[in-house]
Length: 124
Image 1: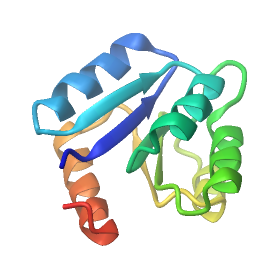
Image 2 (image 1 turned 90 degrees about the horizontal axis):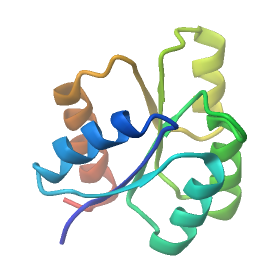
Image 3 (image 1 turned 180 degrees about the horizontal axis):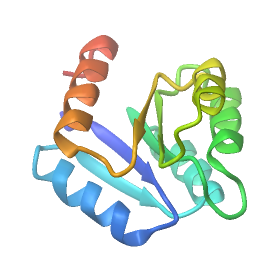
Image 4 (image 1 turned 60 degrees about the horizontal axis):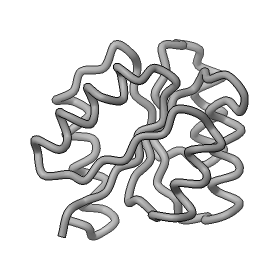
């Protein structure tokens, strides 16, 4: 069974790079370009993991994270950000993100982090 990832970022090219990389590794990837699309997609597809951009127009990553966790406390969300601010990152973890990744992403490190998470949630 394919592991499902929802990648949420307002940069379509970023989403496409992530999609191509992870689909090449056997994952199923859905893209959303803003917070509202992300929430609708999550409710419809219930992906195993959400890769969520921190800064987006409209609802930002922390707002989407809070709404996802209110809808599904078991949602597995990894924050993706170019912001290196300890308080911001700690706040995301406190709000329920299981981890964070800094942009520019190292796709192989991200792959390892997701493999560990899938092992934890029993989807591997």
